[in-house]
Image 1 (cartoon, rainbow, N blue to C red):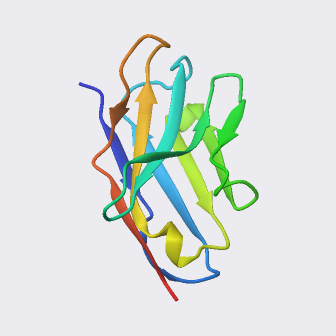
Image 2 (image 1 turned 135 degrees about the horizontal axis):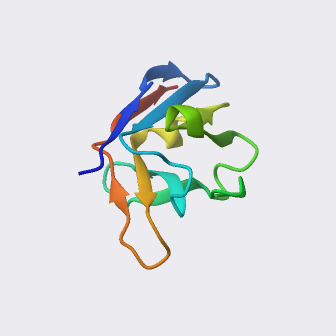
Image 3 (image 1 turned 120 degrees about the horizontal axis):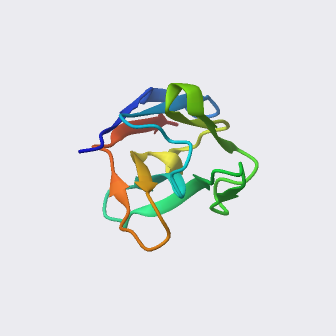
Length: 117
């Protein structure tokens, strides 16, 4: 079973930055889609950013200009750089993989990001 292990979360002040990492237990070179989702209290889980094998990326409107997703195939790791954080970014962040376009999305266990104002 493929594992996704997130790290790098924590408590940060508004305006600060964090870098989330997701270590994947299998090679990620040919995975159709890797991404980060988040779920705030009382809200549905939402896509924050995604990255494809070509390097193409997509971001939620709330993440554009502040967050950056990247991948290191050699380390089988996906990153999410979070900048200019505000209280609305407080959530549990989940790493996700979708092996192919017709497959389900598989999530890691999640990691808490808390932004204090």
